Image: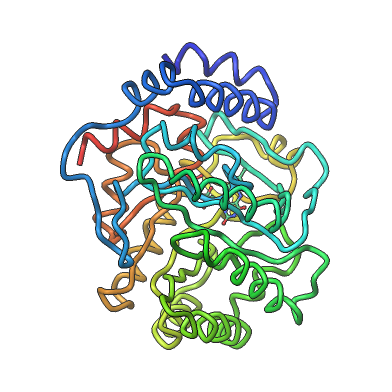
Length: 344
Ligand SMILES: Cc1cc2nc3c(=O)[nH]c(=O)nc-3n(C[C@H](O)[C@H](O)[C@H](O)COP(=O)(O)O)c2cc1C
């Protein structure tokens, strides 16, 4: 069915197509008969899909990657597509509009996207308000919610810790796990926070606040695929030393190697993070490398270029405990989640 809708959606700008898709999805998820149809169509009824990791019971191992539902506006709709968990955010303390349009581009020749959204989000208060309401009703289908946190563009790196702490404290009652995002290429200098010294300080600070709670929550670190092996070694050491629960590998890449899209088109698009099929191999390499460096109790969530059961399996074989999808949904449609789950 997606092969019918996809050419129509691809006539629209990527952001408009996204808005229209989630509008109709939310509408369908609101009414019991259409919600039933959605679930019937997209949710797998296969048994034994649950995964117990991070001290949590995931209904299944496939999550919606951060950035798709930054403001938690579409949890009900996305839960009807069969996801076991949904990562909201990246949220910043204050609302921000992100970069000017256009800032999201399709690369159909490569089954890829380039985005420079720049953490456009309605801010922490709006997100907390929505999650509070959601929790009062109970999250649909037992889906777990992750909170991906970041800093405002206007906050200098020297004060970034404060932004992460504010997000952590406000979201604490409402999410099941946290993700510290220091790997988006679209907030100037954000990725400098992946350096050993600032990263250790940030994570220790968050862990200190976390451990002071009566029931601490898992904190994971989301990393870029563009790190060298030496930087990955440092990251692995820091994760172990700070007692983090896990790592999400990977965010989008600033690399443009091996693309079928012409150099001219890429130049016209400009800066941004590349996601989708061309990211697959590198993301898997990072997962495989980190798995050899981290103790087995540290959870790896694998993300980057998953667009088929085989590519999902590749991430798991490399050492991922859970996986996430974003660009694959755009190119393969919502039936992808069920297809992967039924291949497990
Ligand atoms: C439009 C867009 C927005 C994104 N926004 C975020 C974000 O806010 N925070 C984040 O951690 N990752 C963000 N990502 C990265 C995805 O979560 C994911 O790590 C990346 O796209 C690789 O997965 P994929 O190949 O399945 O798309 C975004 C990706 C896209 C395409």
